[in-house]
View 1 (tube, rainbow, N blue to C red):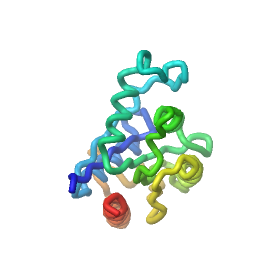
View 2: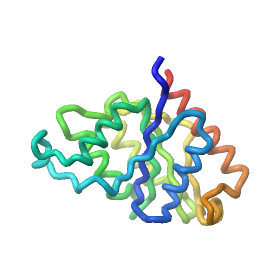
View 3: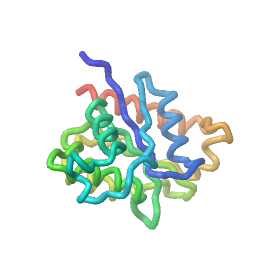
Length: 180
């Protein structure tokens, strides 16, 4: 059996993003390799660039990474009660080509925010999109981190034992999900 590898993307492009910190923490907890793809590299989706002659190298590389990994883990912030534009842009690049790179891909959604509801609404919207695209989406456990400024310290370490246990359960379940 091929080694299980997970690709992760953070929908926040902010330098000190809590969603990027969340992915780094999950990477430390996981017992499989997690590679993080920087969405800053992707241009805004433009269907005119879909031909092989004009496809941006970053898009080509992103698609290759998705194909070469067993699962895709998304950490999404919540902006205006929905997903961030960087997340939507990444999904558009993966799903509008004649080859949908999301169909049957093992996927999981997580998110962190400074608000009291975590990223509940964004994750609901993202779940609708990914379900429509045919993702093999893990439904449970869900990982919403509220008040992220109190959960992660300045070094990006988790300061809340209960959240750590939830994160551990989430990543372990996702790894199992990817092996089914």
